[in-house]
Image (cartoon, rainbow, N blue to C red):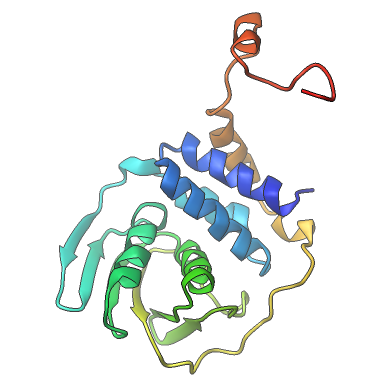
Length: 212
């Protein structure tokens, strides 16, 4: 059973354990919460996205409207793709992510950015297009969870979208009880230090009283 803060902390630690920079790990943690609140199998999604760590090979090519990532990895190139669109001036800016491994994580990153910056994003996969705006949502049952897939991510002023499924006002921890949790736990364990007298003196672990 997890609160939202506990879930975000686990995803953050797992991302650090996978070798990702702190900034990317923070982005992935908030995106994971966004997905979990909408009943996506967030542990399974993140286990796949973090599988290759930060060293996954990818290539970026600039284009007239934005850019193109080859062999895209959502945990690594997803935050960069979102940043490119946020920084762009044109509402029709776009980024192609070819062979994307975890499209649902990209959706979560776009959802958080839409809420934070008031920007609408269009996520096109094959013949389907999903639009995520401020406080917007997509139906978890219709969105592809696994890749590799080719994705076209755009800033858009077009609010025509797939049927929406409103995010719940309460968080149901059962929604994240999926099969990817052991993989995330194993990555998170990499951020812990061994229990010893020396590590405790150095500040590791919980305090000995309720006031610590």
